[in-house]
Amino acid sequence: MDDVFAALSHPVRRTVLDLLRERDGRTLGELEQALKPHTTLTRFGVMKHLKVLEEAHLLLTRKVGREKHHYLNPVPIRLVADRWISRYAEPHVAAMTGLKLLLETNPMRSTAPKHVYELFIKATPQALWDVLTDDTKTPLYEHFNMTSRTEWRPGGARTYYMGDRQVIACTILDMDPPHRLVLSFHAQWAPDVAADQPSRVTWEIAPIGTDACKLTLTHNDFDGETATSKAVVHGWPEGLSRLKTLVETGEPFQLAAPAA
Image (tube, rainbow, N blue to C red; front, side, top):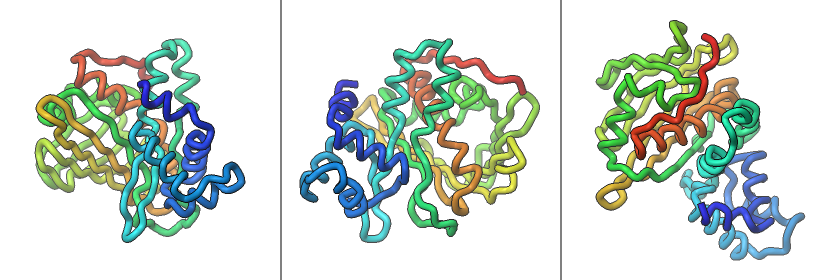
């Protein structure tokens, strides 16, 4: 966590995160322009601060055409919060942890990812894959302790439930065990999200040495600024931090589920 606190210690880097919170997916040029009222840094100076944030995993980058887009990664901040926030305070704090907002105000579908998360897990890709593909373990890490039922094959259905109520319908679009899983994602927990077109969730697992891996989750292909794109920012940071705890320790990080 030292690198996270070090990255957050500089006001320019905190301003960068605030800018990405306001509008994620900005290019270097866009960030440079947005920072001008706050600093006299040169383009090279901005790049140095972005590098510190990227090395602390608070910022992720993705190439879209010839441009590099920058995305806020709230998972490390969520892990810090999970360490010190009490279980009594957590329900109130959770409502304020939607650190990722929308990429742009353009209502048309974008080629840039909407939400990108990255974290490092002290476990092999196979160990992480085994948890992700075990329906009995889903409620041990998912937001609201959701359960799941899955047909583990390309084209198979994966359905999430709260109690007996179906809340998310997915289809497996691609599987490459233990490195890649791609799902369509159709939220159904409320009428507004149920009216949205399905989006796409991609889990990518890359080995690091012999006993660790990097997990990158990309949730994109939203049809503009949808109710789903606004809602999922609250669930992913919690679910990913709980997943990391479960895979690394074998112990679930339990949160009380709401009434179905």
